[in-house]
Length: 272
Image 1 (tube, rainbow, N blue to C red):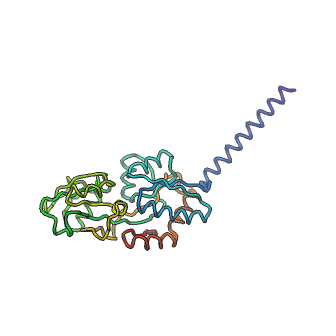
Image 2 (image 1 turned 120 degrees about the vertical axis):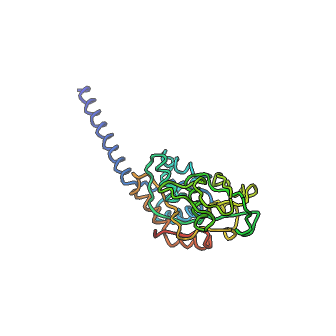
Image 3 (image 1 turned 90 degrees about the vertical axis):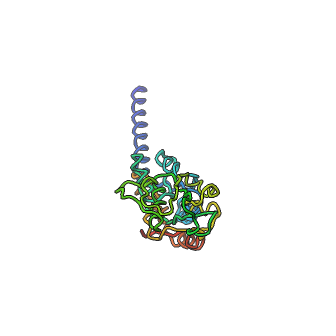
């Protein structure tokens, strides 16, 4: 009898364990434990995400913000499962990351546009840049392509037609002022301004360095396709907590914060 009772007890415990696992799986599928870890880069992305987290808190969502100093770790950390989402990259950067790494990260909502600009400590206007000046651009493929296309849109250079391939300094065609292009880490560009004549810098790094975005010699237009987004693993795009965070980010409270704090240096693009 004891042996039979033991077998029955084991079966009951096994069934309970399976039921518990099943419930856990259901909860995971719902994508909601009211907690979310978001990766960002320093500056506007971090500051705005914190404001969105405050709004999300009112909806019962506890958001933890993790700040990174480069454009690599926020995506690798997301892929490795250390983050639930990130908010730092443009849609073009995202597409290039997926292509290069064979990943399937997806946007769940656009956030802001941070117009890239040409900055200098040596001259006050673009016309003052001498023939043969050295221009620094970001060394990651997506932002390097972006920098060169901004310069092309401002008639500084022309670019060869590369189809769907991102352009590099090797694809510069006409270069009236014979500029020399050097590729450097995007986050380090403000610190390298003493070493070059000018640099194409992302707005978040300009603001983080305490520079005035209105001092840009040239600036990206508001029709730019380089919109930033909240990004997640494709399997989590419908998670309830992710949707709560995007809803909070797209709130009037956050929009007002962006417009008042950045005075046009950062532009909300929630409806794109």
